[in-house]
Length: 572
Image 1: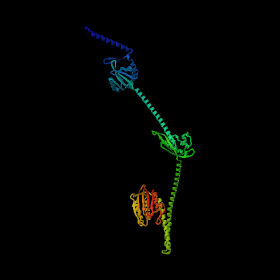
Image 2: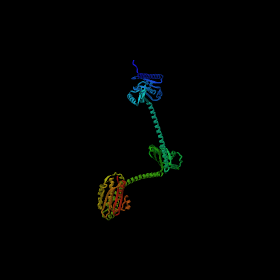
Image 3: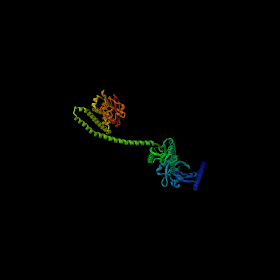
């Protein structure tokens, strides 16, 4: 038998003591497990079954983990659940004994297996955190936040996992959002209350300022709120109606309006309130003596910085005298219209009379002229009686001729009045002058007159052609008829623009006339030189033609030197 050395013997004793110590420890552990002092879990590993325990010394930590509102797990390296607290088991709807010892993968939805593997790898490497759902017993998914941390437990590496229920957190967030929303509503309400308070203060301040200013104006002044209710009347109103300032304002104002004006005034006010347009109305207000006076009521809306109407500011201005004056003017205009209508009827009657008289007088005057011719044929020529009678017959013939010309002129005046509204056209002035000169050729020869024409600046005039010819004819014929017998006649006709008019001037070197009497020159049958044959109707017709078309005629003259007639044609 081989001898055992002292060293080997000592080593065997040491090992034997170690084995005995381990046996005692195992017996104590078994006893503790049996008595419940220690929780244990047998996990089958590559080296056989292993026992994982939580010692009684950790009882305080276990109690804390069991009672907290978070889930707790201890995972082995193969993802076996070494420990699970009751909170997490309850969330998963399993008993503790069903969870512990099982694989955590049984609670991971298939769609999140890859993500879970990444979290595990990061956790075993140190720490990891993520969010994912876990599958409960009824196969529903519940959102969780997981936080992993690698630990050593009884010299064995484990993965400690803290699981937080996000559904509760989501409810909390929803509640917080609701609270925040309610707080926002409350803040908005507070802001609205502050704004309303500020707006009310602004309205009150504006009203006070308006009242202070309105007390200083001479008109009756008033204010109303945005709804149209009267809020203020200045002192002028109470002085006007003789009422106490304590009387109700709307009643005081409405009852003072004339009954016939209430409807129109109320309608105008309601329209302004509806459209925000300025108010302007005329109505009669009763004063303290019971008399009604016409007032012009005006009002404008006053707005805040947001453009909202905060009040109306209005005035009543006494227009009684002006209103009466306008009524008198209206009455005068009506009377004038009636008078004009009467004059129109008289003119029509005169025109008809002149037309009838000229027509009816032509027959007897022609008969008288015929009788003169018959009388001449009966008287023997060359007799003494004939020589005495002939001057009388000549005077009778002159009277007949003048009477016939007067009838013709009256007819022309009547035609002029009836042809007043002839349409205007562009008329070539040069051609009109040329045609008139052909008609006046005998007068040009008699006066040995020379005509100068300068109408290039206004070669055409917008006028009735017949009336333009009458103007040119009468002005040129007068210049020739009243020429100076001691010198050759010289007549010039010029035309140019003069503001709103076209000015046609006819100048001559004839007899001239007294300008102090020129205002009578254009009257009917008015003549200044009796030695020349004429009726005094031509210039009257020229004046009427021009005035009917919005123009006028003027004259400048000097006795013995000549005259200048200026005809103004209104430009169209």
